[in-house]
Length: 133
Image (cartoon, rainbow, N blue to C red):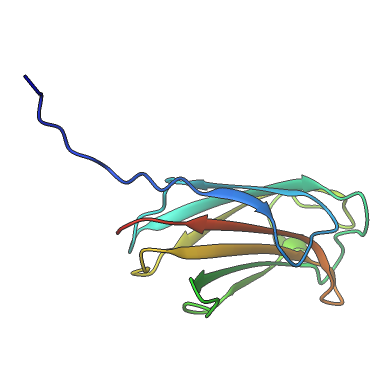
């Protein structure tokens, strides 16, 4: 005898350094994981910079890309030093950012970057969601 069951495609997002490289390791967590289409998701981005510094003009950039690398919607760009509790210059950071999710394709990626005031990458993390909506 078998018990009927439903298969669920849980699409947990695992973030790792971007393929283009990342001078510093940054940690990215997302809730809910996996994110739900047309629902807000909360990103927690944290790290300790070993090279470079977060200073006035440093940016947090979150972009969403499809499976061929095309940007979906507009990238979110925030001034890191304006985050509550953030004091610049800094080497340590912990940021919370709500992102309103689009109606996303089955497979897509998040690219989360920390940029210095000149636009140079201090940290970059890539997380891919694979599955069905």
